[in-house]
Length: 88
Image (cartoon, rainbow, N blue to C red; front, top):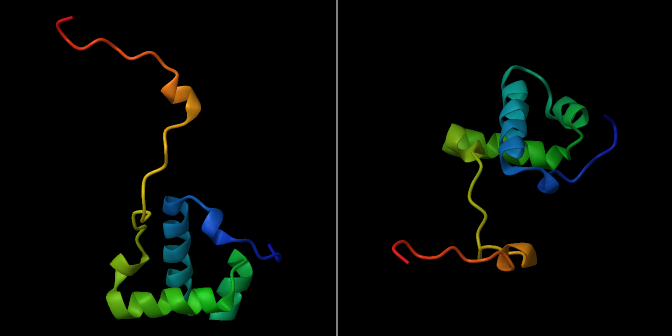
């Protein structure tokens, strides 16, 4: 995989696994350049993940909740009929 891709578009759990595998590969002796090439990432990204891991430990690589306001309900969900309350 030679072309770079935008990892931000990946699912958070998949990105967490990618971070963990990339850091594990560096810790096992692979160079950051090799890991970046194999996973199609920027070297700076891999360096940042390794630095975060060394500073904060394994929890630094875990998926974090997405900040901000939750997404709005879609139009299809809003058009579904409401169920009556219990006892009606």
